[in-house]
Length: 393
Image (cartoon, rainbow, N blue to C red; front, side, top):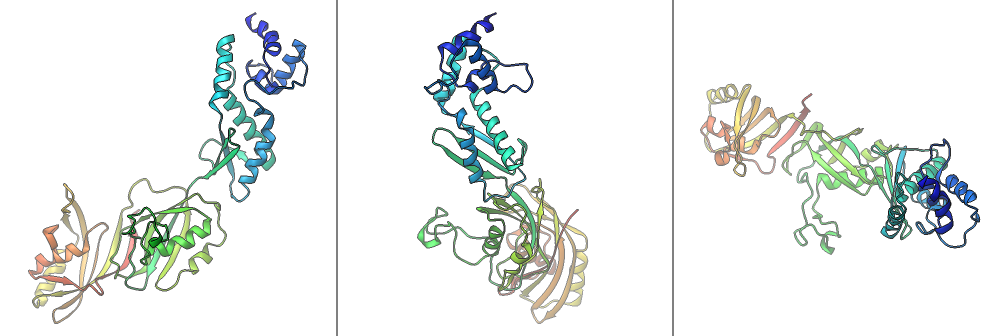
């Protein structure tokens, strides 16, 4: 009976648009939306169809769904997507106005203004674009701010897997923070926050961002190498998160790969569903060049190769409290010319190869320097080259 009383009272005493009125009374009738309910209630209460004043709750927000839909569709025009979702920011004053009305009249169970607005706007845009609305991992998320009539679009990140080769020495893997601004951005670094020094990351960033018409990129490297090392074979693998992409399924991946020149090339670039949950495990084959302080014999060579055949070593980094165990699968001395030695080795990824060879800081035990009982200096010009990097399955 209380509800029947308000069916007459509210339409007469409060200036509400059809949608905001209908929303206060949940209906069991199928196919009757809030606007239809409001119209029916006004008719029963004898209220004129056209009220001259704005709605007490929403102003003219609910009657502007088509206008907001136009804004959303325009903002999505340069995005590629298979599904979407729209959320809303509604002024606090409107939410409070509806809450106060419901508290005063003891109304319960009705849809909120924000939920109603979002739902109807999603339905309108979906119908016009013939694209599905989804709340679970949408390709694009749109936020409509009804107070300032502004639309914000964000697109879900894309993940790629790739491999790069490096045939020129002197190129570091990662970009370095600008020393002038410490990463904040300044004229010296063209407002990027990064040094303009050449790097693999910088070389890969430009064509990949262009490929996806994206804003930013985050790399996850599968191991690293010295700036003077080469990366050969099938290349070093990496994962990348493409942030704010406008294109989700690029058609010119081969073209982007072929643009890389002058010592850096992309061997592979593939879309993947998600980033790896854990750090990928891998093995690495390396060719190294170094100098001994004393000559060695064939017996020394044989002892070295036998000592690191399927052998585990303990790595205890100075800046970490615990040690980790890494496996050396094989070592093969390829040539010795006087005090100069060239060697190939295959080991588990994550091992500090430089410290394993030189014994520097006693961080890796046992190590090559210790087994040979010789001081070792890495050739800084051609320290070690990456022959193969293989992900463990």
